[in-house]
Amino acid sequence: MEIKDFKYFTSVCKYKNISKAAKSLYISQQALSTSIKNLEKRLKTKLFNRTPTGVELTNDGLYLYEKVDTLLKQYDSVCDDIYSHFDINKGTISIGISLGVLRSLSPMIFIDFMNDYTDIKVETMDYLDELCKDMVLNENIDTAISIKPVYSNNIDFISIKSEPLMLLVNKDNDFAKLKTVNIKKLKNEPLITCDERLQLYHYQVEKFRQHNISPNFIFKTNEIEVMTALVSENRGMLICAEHVWLETRYNNVVAIPFEDKTFIWEYGFLLKKDKPVSKIVKKLIDYIIKKG
Image 1 (cartoon, rainbow, N blue to C red):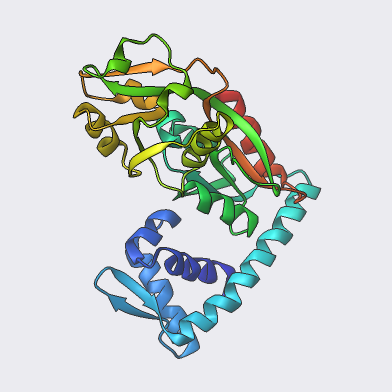
Image 2 (image 1 turned 45 degrees about the vertical axis):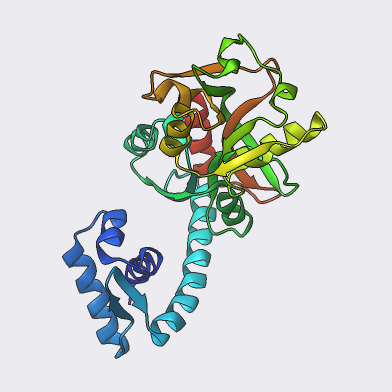
């Protein structure tokens, strides 16, 4: 058995789907299936059961995953140390991407990075903000690009970009006549928002708290299209990043800037505090900050 076999196996465990795992590994579905079958043959056991949506681990598969996952983390750590010592830009970077970030930061930047550094592979995974933070803290991923955490003493944040937050309202709403809006004016006003798994929710609550008022959230969803549709129907108002306003398809929706210019949507790299950062992760950070 080789390290490659174990990496293929853990990828299937992660995606619970042969096709998706093969795509992430840049190999054919047939090649991955053959690798798993050969591993099962060597171990004389069945590692996965098929489900309507993919596969799930058997008891033996779960046992192997727990052993192999630890082994691969140690192996990757040793490789990173060796590459770092000899100043070799080689390895794999696992990075969580928060919901909404790729609306502002082009996904092409990761492809361009891998084209420029052909020995570095970047594995991106989509998570909600809170999960991004937890995955970094638990060292399940190397880093994440997410919204700046409102509350976290164990995370280092490196900013990539910020956008002003805007108030989206229907043209028939009285607020549409304003050139700027003071957050105090939103007391008791119906607001549409994301849920608690996104940092923007906590950021709004904290900003309102600073003005000794509470937001009147009438509906929560993480679907941007649903949010803007509700504004278009004049069911409520929405606080969102500028790019959401620029992308909206509704002609009867307008955006009003806030008087408070510190009220922004900011995203960047999340790193676990006091954890050493590998050279290849530093290289990715420098690359994206320069080009992002």
